[in-house]
Image 1 (cartoon, rainbow, N blue to C red):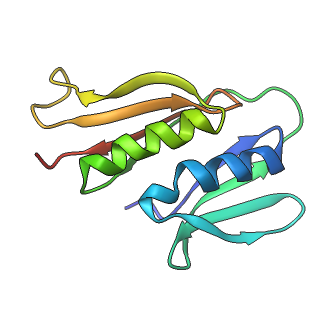
Image 2 (image 1 turned 180 degrees about the vertical axis):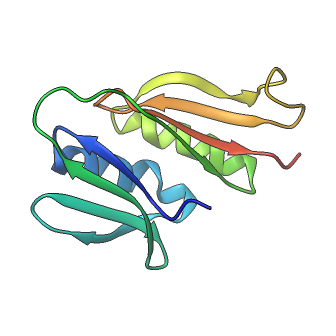
Length: 120
């Protein structure tokens, strides 16, 4: 079981604003911050850390699960409105699984962020 994930970002303030907005439909909020890192989570349980890293970052893939398809839709809408690049509109990905409903965006550092729902 994964306890938390850390993503390097080049602009901590911009990334904090983006992730706080994009993940709000899933119940995420900023739970901790200092001059070099930001921790996001649900109800105090921090599981996503953003940390400032100067220079080039190599994009990672982060997939978050939700029990409701409308949260996938809201994530994609809010993330794109907050500056993310569309990397896959919400919809069924039958090549992954029959009930794999997901959306994908690219953040400002090229990280591929996905939200998936397995419930019909």
